[in-house]
Length: 160
Image 1 (tube, rainbow, N blue to C red):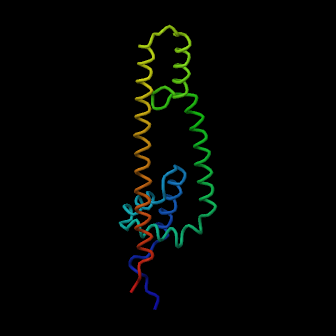
Image 2 (cartoon, helix red, strand yellow):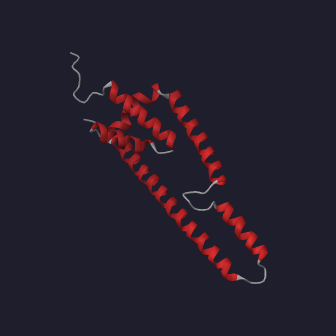
Image 3 (cartoon, rainbow, N blue to C red):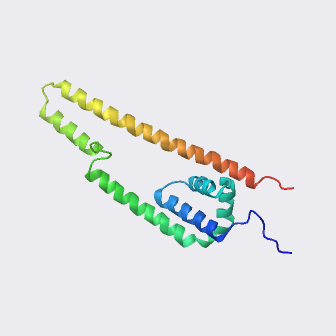
């Protein structure tokens, strides 16, 4: 008797899962975030999506995964080049700010410290913003590791 399970994955669900994971890879996001996104759309758990991806779908998409990784690397290179040529989020490029600070220091060696103090405050503000962004990113990675641990525990849980 070959009855189809009620919770069986359809081809459309598999495609949605694959496309979402590949998009997340391209964008530099974690697969766990992709599993959460797909889980919401399909009314499944992120663990179920992760298990389906790793057990069945990933093997079919090895070439696409490599292409997505290459796209991400290429995109990161282009973003790095753009950051050095333009402003970032409307603020001066840190390298340009450093060059400007050094040029001002060279031009004002007779103790106009007020100018330097203001530029140091701007640099500190930029560092504070960058630090907050890094903390947010670290928090995302920590959440991803926690979710991965939950998935690992679920996968290795003894079945009855």
